[in-house]
Image (cartoon, rainbow, N blue to C red; front, side):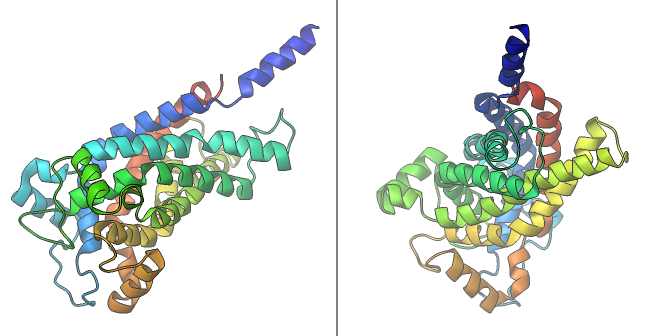
Length: 316
C-alpha cells in the first residue's frame, strides 16, 4: 500500500504545471524586454529601410549603435521605448505559451511515442523537442499576433526620420481599435498571422532544443557543472541559433505587418520573393546584429531565471 501511495505521489510530482510555467516564462520575458526594447526599435527600422528600393538605397541607420544614437538624438528615451507597453502584453502571450507549453507538449509526445509515463519527462528526443518547440511557439504567435502588429507600426513610426509606411497610434489600444475599424475587423487584427507563425515556429523549433542540447552536452562531457555559467552559455548558444534561423522570417514579418492593406505584399511568400529580387538575399539578414544581441540577452535572462526555477515552475 505504501509503495502504491509513493508511486502516485511521485507521478503527481512529475506532472507538468502549465500555469506555473506560463507565469515564470512570461515574467522573465517581460523583465528582459524592458532592456531590449530599444534594440527592437532599431531592428524594426533597419529591416524596413531600403524596402524594395534596391541594394544602393541610403542607410539612415548604419548599425545598431548608430541607430540608437540617431533615435535618441531625434526622439529621446521615449523614442527608444516605443511600443514597450504593447511588448509587455505580447511577451505574456508569446513567451508564456512558448515556455509554458513546451514541457507539457514534450512530455505528452514522449509518453505517446518514446517512453513510459515515469520516464517521459527525462527523455531528450531531438525530433520531439523540435515539434514541441514549434507547437508551443505557434500557439503564442497566434495569440500575440495583433499586439505584434501594433508594436511593429508603433516602433517604425517617426516624425523625424520616416522609414517605411508610417502609421501613428496614440497607444496600443488605439492601434487595435484603428486596425479593427479601418482594416477589416477581426481579420485585420490577425493580418500577417501566417508570417508570424512561420517566424515564431522557426525560432521556437530551435530555441529550446538547442538550449537543452547544449546544456546536456556541456554537463555530460563534464565541461561545465550545474549553475548560472552553464545556463548563460547554453542560452547564448541558443540565442545565436535562433537568430540565424529566424532573421529572414523576422524581416518578412516586419514588412508584412508594417504595410496597410496589401499595398506591397499579398503575403509572406510574396514578400520573400520581392525582397530578394529587389535587394538581394542579404536583405533577409537586415538587423541581424540587433536580433543576435536581443536574442542572446533575452535568452540569457529568461533561461537563467527559468532554468534556475524550472523544477518549481513546471512540476507540482
